[in-house]
Image (cartoon, chains in turn brown, cyan):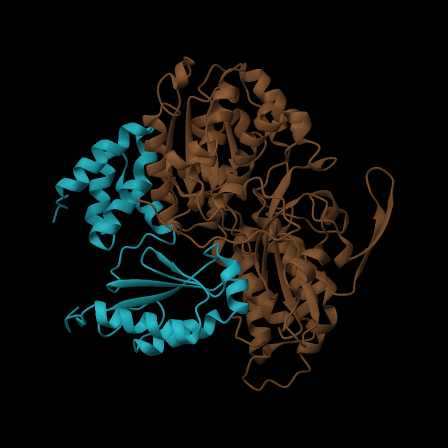
Length: 458
Length: 169
């Protein structure tokens, strides 16, 4: 059954590769439509190459993971333990749940065959015995659309036995999560797919490329990353690498939300547009009469930037930079140079109408809810940070709360099995460090019972 | 009393289990099927699942109780989730939740007195660009303004007959 979803007009600054068909008003989810628009042509091309050649193209492209860590996909594939003789698995991480992120949903809803094609090319390159799409429960329509699309692809022999007469066989199945954020962490996802609680595994030794699903070599890639594989084959790795800027290649879908006039998802050449241009030009700027208070540059776990702050330092190539938030290029390396990260590509803008302590209380409630409970510092610490910030906005703030929060954060980060420890500590650490005056000032405020933010945030 | 699985559930289980390299992996998909069919995953159903997958009932319950979506209790006829996380909260999701609860004379996480709905907060529903958003059963509703919310409430009331729980329940 075809479903229709609203499509967005491209902004002149956009360069749509992944979203090109997805956002075309004439385009639907059927395989006939995909085939008319060149779908699966790149799979045919890739299957005419040797798997190693396909892998080489992906290495040459320099494509970095779009899920959060920004690790080069070709390198990840290189770590596969091929000597073990065990089956290799490919998993598409479609558990999109980092607050602020809503790009994978668009791809799966509007252009499912692009993902299937990218996955089958990747599966062929790494010689996967089976492939999975792990999709979050909250996207039931996307799961159905993908199921239908896989059936169509199987009928056309793009998936299944002896694909396109190549002798290579690979089944692809859709597996549904059940509303746990931690399943976006790749080892948590693997445990979940094995039918257990999604308790992340410690690395080392459990690097998925060696000891992944069923203790077999496994590659976990994000939806957008796998879609790019198709385009790497189309352009050729070296040509593809010319899109964007060195070490930050290709296009990337950035998700803009919060206090801007035109929130949305925008596919931009990596490194060619700045945060300022995205927020003020493409995103339509702030609401009239409002001023910028803070920007969360890469999903709610990314360290916050305070309006007006400047970032100074040297880039890897030696060039010196002196940026305001607005000057930071939208890529992988620059937000890191500015003390935060591009994460999942989710930018949340906060204007002066919001109480910054309340904003942190909202974020802390998320991470406290989503801690898997395996490691004490994260399980206990995330709850304490939530309790303290919630108390602060309900009239119970004390002068020592800022340093107390910071000390809890400091005792979580680096002391847990997975990166959820950092994800829950970084917001608190950075909000307290950058808005120390607001946290200290909270105790002196007279509590009136009404919230300072436009809407209640906790 | 032992769980009596429907023919559909037996057929679904027979079809889904062989798709995975290991039986246990099918658990989440089977639990989804049961919850969709029964509205919840009762303890006897969990025992049935355990028997199908060569697991202990506790291994099934570990999964049911870990994932926020699975539930052992019943909910109202319509399951409403309001996204609580930052972008939606900045767009007024707490107000949306308050309005929904008021419209059905209920509190979050409870079955409304008319049995029509359960309203819950959910964490990030991944549609932050169209905040605030809510899900009613499988469907996502975006940019939920006051007028839109009133329309949705009216529609639920028209479509879903009121049927209060029996006093003993």
